[in-house]
Length: 441
Ligand code: HEM
Image (cartoon, rainbow, N blue to C red; front, top):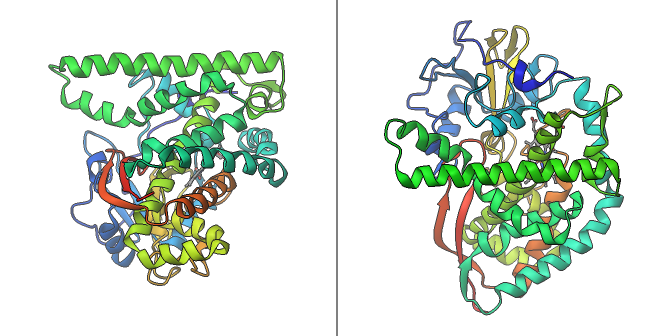
């Protein structure tokens, strides 16, 4: 199977057809700093209202892209993989030329099923599925519940703490390690690797600014970053080869023994599959766990309702995911000329779907900026995507949110966000690095 990292191409410069809607001034969705104050909901509102398919220029010779913000239009693009390819340019905003950026990380972020089109995508996805079935997840749920109990007990008596450090970063990691089958002794290393992976975008921005005279601090950080990333891939490759030779009943074995066109995955695809599962399963759930606490503090009536109505937890989990929408965007590349909401899109152009915008579309969600844990259509959010690539781990994320808030609110009825928050400069994932909480027991 050819390597996507070698064949993916950047979009073509556009727009190739006249713009059906006016441009919105001041958009900088390609700038990671735009997202440190949270998602740009005001810009999303303007875009949905006046320019639902809006051309966004890029600088530095990059080709620009279409911004899609309405719920129906995101569904349209997500649901038409024959026209809107994940593979042609990958799912990230920019397709670096081979040999630029962090070699291993750059390559691995491409050679994975999330960047594949039919028919290989489905062949590989199918191999992961046994670890995401209701039967498998039921037995996982009791383990998640015990881990939540342990983490909540660890917070008791502290009065105030960083929820990310004490809870949100730890639970998804535990869950992922359980599904993958990572031995207990190796698990603490995952926390460190995640810390560096989250900073990848940040590092690229700092390096660009300090190209001429990088500070000692930056050089040290780059060295630690490279060591950690290399360690993460070495570990993944070692374990996957081990499982290929000695299969166990875990997701690591399923990936190691997956076959596409009758062949085991090459080492490049093992690296990519490893990166995808470690990143996709962790970061997204972590940020929703933290974001939910902020929302419950901003909407105290909803917190009181949830504390008294445990039966609302599954719907509340969906409502948290709708409002946080931790994956900011997914990109596609048009394989042929197409039309979305009356805007003609030329073959080769990049189309970017903004999930946070779609999930607050007033045509679908009444009073969309309000947390409403009893919302009758909370499950119509598309934070997990839609179509053939729809998130494999969606139920895993929901179970964690349900268990987390069942126990957090029962154990600390007055727990609330204390106003302290730090959001990473990242335009792909809404990444909450620190969220202070206080509670009295
Ligand atoms: C709130 C939590 C989560 C959100 C919002 C989320 C979001 C998404 C989105 C939007 C996609 C679609 C990509 C596309 O259309 O190109 C996706 C794919 C994926 N997610 Fe999640 N995710 C979450 C949690 C998880 C968890 C817990 C796991 C694993 C344990 C996971 C594993 C995956 C995988 C493997 C894919 C790729 C599927 C494919 O390409 O067929 N995700 N996720």
